[in-house]
Image (cartoon, rainbow, N blue to C red; front, side, top):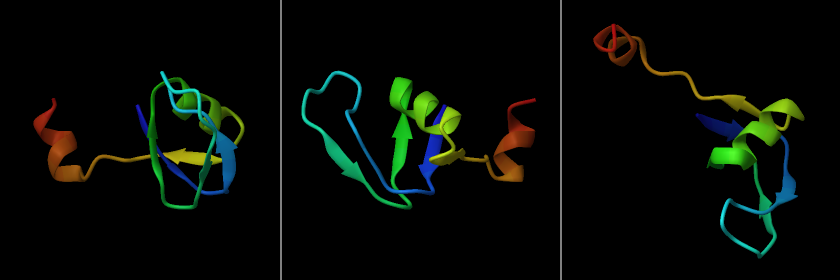
Length: 56
């Protein structure tokens, strides 16, 4: 899953130890993306319709 940050927040990327200040527009994946989505700090990136149809 890939999400786009909608509200700035500090967090740690998967496998890292250093805290990063994420800004609006940043793309996240993995566990951090799931947390950001659950906390409403990000929205899920939508696939363009042309790519979504190819996946069917």
